[in-house]
Length: 460
Image (cartoon, rainbow, N blue to C red; front, top):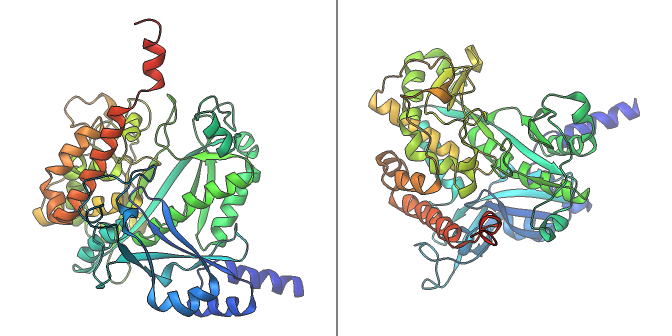
């Protein structure tokens, strides 16, 4: 009975988020000594501070903490870059405030004595940092709330596991790495068993952090896997997504391995992030199931706005390498009933009715992507758009459908000139993320690649 009671107690502690009062009690008991206060940056990464737990509960919990506002004005390598109105050398690179959101407070099972709390970003006067990804999503959720709706979402992240450590991969220029599986292990129980020490630890660690883990499975590329989580409200899903990516990399690093979520690591299958979305009413019932006209206009809006808002789903140069015929990444802006060749796949029925957006890759910022889907869907509802017939057959061979933008430059232009984006997000957000695209394009245009050296070193 004592062992059973202990198991029950451990389950109760580790299968849900914690309260601030519970954190205080554990700090008093000495079982938690560190609190991570994190924001999610433009690239979807966790940034922030490691705080002594006593200082966090005594001071930061009530007042927040400061961080340099350049965290939303740098490139992926943390270089300061020009063009951002909110943060620059001319403005002195001041601070914004990390305001803890205690609904996100969790234990970090893979780090001893550690808890984690995500933050909303505010200026010193208490106003929101509107270009912060979490605030971009909150604004779209508020638009839904005005209509009595909430959004439920799920994200399915794929990643590739390598036997090399992150340090070794860096030293080798991320080339010549050894994938953890040497062949396609899609759904293979034998192939996935090879990585079970890592994948099991990630599954259990995320469950310990309060996430509802459903399953894991092998995927098509060598060493490619996927871990799936139960859907939740959209903000929670995006929060969990960010924590999961960070935690999975930390766990892999501890085991001397490495994981990449980049959209297209090599010429084989890329890493996707399929996003599932549905709406619920104030009673929690699925609106898509109860109101087919609403569902059809919302999905029609998602289709109509997809090209203009692809930048929020595919934010990097590499993102666009996924979009190839026969790759399970979409090329046609079309929808179908359980049709994996389309950009939007309608699945489920009754309480489970939803659509799956297949455009995003593993490099996506989930807050921006879900915000974009909601904005486009609301556009369809407000304009009373009619949904075109479901596409049947192979959408890769469709000649009459618009195409997903083929590169970052095209997506940048569509977003910069998007009426849907401007009405949903406002000029400040538009300018901020257009500049992010400009920074990436300039860096890529200036780079000399291995591909160029191989083709040109001797033979040109």
